[in-house]
Every structure is written in C-alpha cells, then in structure tokens.
Amino acid sequence: MPSAEQLLSDPELAASAWDLAPIVDGEAEAGVRRLLDDALRRAGTFAQAHAGRVAALDSDGLRAAMLELAGITELVDRAGSYAMLSFSTDTADPARGALLQHVQERGTELETQLLFFELEWAALTDDQAQALLGGGADLEFCAHHLRSARRYRPHLLSEPEERVLAEKGLSASAAWARLFGEQVAAIRVAGDDGTERPLEAAFSDLQSPSRALRAEAAGAISAALEPGLRTRAFIFNTLVYDKSVDDRLRRYPHWLAARNLANEADDDSVLALIHAVRSRYDIPQRWYRLKAQLLGLDRLSDFDRNATVAASEPLYSYAQARELVTDTYAQFSSQAGAIARRFFDEHWIDAPLRENKRGGAYCATVAGVHPYVMLNFTARRRDVMTIAHELGHGLHAVLADKQGVFHQSTPLTVAETASVFGETLVFERLLEECGAERERLELLAGRIDDAVATVFRQMAMNRFEHLVHTRRRAQGELSVNDISDAWVESQAEMLGDAVEITDGYRSWWSYIPHFINTPGYVYAYAYGELLALSVYSRYRAVGAALVPRYLEMLAAGGSRPPQELGAMVGIDLADPGFWDAGLALVNEQLLAAEALAQRVLPSA
Image (cartoon, rainbow, N blue to C red; front, side, top):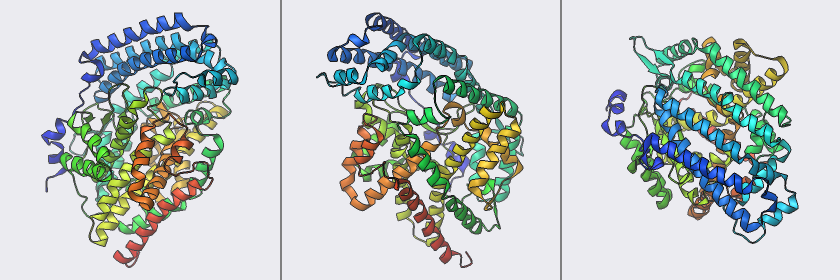
C-alpha cells in the first residue's frame, strides 16, 4: 500500500488547482478592477436615479431597481470572490493581499453609495412594503430578501452614521481579521527532524493510531501557537470590543442577537438548541470513556480525542476519494452525481497542501459563475468525508444558482444541511461495505467522532464565545490567561472527567477563524448537523420518494424562511422536540458502538 507521502505527491492531486479564469473572464487582476469599475459606475447611476425616491416606486419600478441591484451585486461578488480565492491559496503573497485589500476598499465605497436603498426600504410602513411586494410585478427573485431586510429596522442607524461605520469597518474589524488570518497561515509546526509543517498537516497527526506521535504533535502545535499568542489575543479582544460597540449602537440586546437575526432564527429557538445540546453532554463523555477502552487507555487526554481506533487507518488516493464520493452521490441521485463530478472535471477544486495556503476546507459560492471548493487533502479517511461535506455545499449552490444573488445562499442554520447529508450518505455506504464487526466499530467510531465534534464541541465553542463576549463587556480587556481560562471552562463542561485537559491545550482557541471572522457562527454547525440527521432519518423511512423533495429544497436556496424549507422535506423546525429527535440519532449511533464494543472487547 502506498504511504501517505506517496499519495500526497500524486500528480493528479498536485494538478487539482482552481481555474479562477471564468470569474473574471480570463483577465486575472485586470478583470477584478474592470468588474469593480463597472459596478461603481452603475452604482453611481443607480443612486442618482433612486436616492430619496424609494417610497415613490411602484411595483414595476421596484422590480427594475432590484434587477439593477442584482447586476451590481454580482459584479462585486465576482471581483471579491476572485481576490479571496486567490489569496486563500497563498496568504503570504503581497500582491494577492494587496488585491484583496483593493477589493475591500472599493467594495466599501460601493456599499456607502447604495446604503440609502436599504434604509429607505426599511423606513416604509408595513402596508407600503406589502403593497409593493403584492403589486403585480414578478418579484419572486427578491421578495424573501426584501422581507428579511425589514427585520433589521430596529437596528439600523441614520444614513450618515451607516456610512461612517461602513467606511471605518475596513480599517477596523476587516483589517484585524485579515491580520489574524495571515498570522495563523504563517504558523509552522516544527518536527524532530528539523523540518516545519503548516498547522493543517500537524493536526492530521492527531488522528494517528500512535499515541506517542499524537502527544508529540500536540506538544509541537502548542509550542507553535505560543510565539504569536499575545498578538492573536489582542486581535480577539479588539474584535470582541468592536462587536460590543456595534451591538450597543444598533440596540441588540445581547452578543448573539445579531447572528440569530442573520440566521433567521429567533432567540428562543437558539436557546432551546443550546440547552438541548448542553443537557446531553453525557453523550460525548460516554463516547470518550468508550474510546479510551478501544485505545487501551485508562483515560483520554485532549490530544487523543481524534485518534483513530483502527490499528492502521486506511489511506486513500485523491482518485479513490473522488470516485467514492461522486459514485455515492450518483447512487442517491444521478443529477447529484453529475454535479459532483463537474467539480473535479472542470477544476472547481483546489486540493493539495501548499506553503502559506489557508487551512481547513470550504465551499465558496460565486454569483453568476459556479462554486469553488478548497481542500487540504492529507489522504486520510476524514479527507474523504470532508470532500463529501464540501461537495454537499457545492451541490446546494449549483442547484440554487437559478435563485440569483439574493436567494442563492441560505442562512447559516440551513447551510450545513446538504453538507452533512452528503457526509452521511458516504458514511452509510462505507458502513454497508464493512464485513467484520471490528471494522464496523472502527468506522462507526469515526462517525461518532465527527458528530461529537460538530454538535457538542461546536456548542462548547459557543459557550466559550459567550464567556469571552460577556466577560469582555463586563470586565474590560481580557488577558491571555482570561481567554484561556474561558476556553478550558467551556471544554471541561463538555468533556467532564472523561478527558484530561493538558496545559498545552489552553491556547488552542487561538487558531480558530470563526471566532474572528463570524462571531456566533459555531452553533449553526450543531443546528445543521441535527437538521441533516433528521432529514436523513426521513430518507431512511421513505426512501427514494424523498429524493426529489430534497433536491427541490436545495434548489430553493434562501428564497424561503428556514421553517418553510424544512417543511419541504417533512421537518418541523418549530417543534420544541426537534432538537431532542436529532440528538437521539447521535445517541443511537453511540448505542450501536457500545453494543459492538461489548462483542469485540469483552471487557468493554
């Protein structure tokens, strides 16, 4: 069997780089600048035509205005996407950083020109807005967007104030977030042989069956995080304070309120989710106790949590991973399979590990073009699941493309549905192909690891954010130790006495971009996982009959509220017991693992 090093040097993997040319019509940086110039010119014309006159529009006039706004938005999105995607693959390149900054500056200039429209639309009475939306013109391409925008009415400021905040934001929160990203991308983890690796490569060692290697990798990661820790803590402090000022000015009642509004989720439903998950921390604690037995340990340490329980973890070439995922999608739906293959055939994926490449994985939707997927492929089974996850996002984006720029994307709470569903399809296929009980247990263990990480760990990270944001507002600037204490406190609640938290782990909050780029984001992972598991449960119950309804839900994008999207596949998001039902499915997997362990390990 080829080694991981051999698989990672595979020419097919090395060649799997993005083709960003379609975004800018093959004009590279010049195309970015042309798109922005065109958008700014059209925005100026739009402002001259409509500023101060939104209340005078009839339904046909509103449609014409929204079509022009869609065109302007698409131009800016394409320019920004090109700059961001290019920067992601080499965050140390000054030219790429400068282009990204240029896009952000011009984008802010354009935003200030168009601010008036949102403010004037929000200022209309409910009767006026409803009359325009029901006035006979075809406004389906933007109706939900316009209705959602009015939910921000209590939190909008005057136009001059909004202009100041928009223009200063680029040299404030956006600048700090960029600095954080560049700092993390530049972190190198030293090895015993004197070589250095990106964080992403070092984290993959935490999945190793060798505890010595895991402990060594954890120590090296902690050491690598240490030099810039105070700087990253200062960035975090600054952004948390910046958010508190923004929330105060906009009259948000608590630190998570703005995120809930953006997610089209009311505070009560989010609190119900948080309470439901935290009340079932017995699930991860039971799992980690069982995992310790499977690994032959008395107790796990934090660096053991992601370890494979297999004596030797299977490795996958990039080609094997591609075929497994695309074929599984095709078995579910020929349309889904065909779309998944396009990502590989048409160079929509950038997969290899590279120097200064951003860590992690994501799928970026590009208006009017197609989505792009970034991976950091390390040949592990988890990478196969990551491909399945990101292609779920990609399938969602391709199917929803017809919705246009206003409705293609969904709130974060629904955005993870297709990705987790895709992961589950691939997992169930792998499970079906397992023969021996030990092999089934090993595979099931990986899936429970993922569910714990997505539901429970993300909720612990939500608790960490809550502690940091509330304490920062009450106490002022937090020290590195204060932030690390909050991290340990939130992690310890989830882990209980099942996992030892080592001293080095105290700083591991400091590389996570969600806390910086999208405060409050992380609970959406738990929301999406539980929603997707519920949808998959429906698929198991009704079979192929759900497929067209599921694809229809994805194709609806964000054109409907989350509750209506869930109803399309028979899910009632308003049911208070919804979260418990999803958690029961995770518990079901754990019960299956416990039963298998009883047979495989008589002493378990």
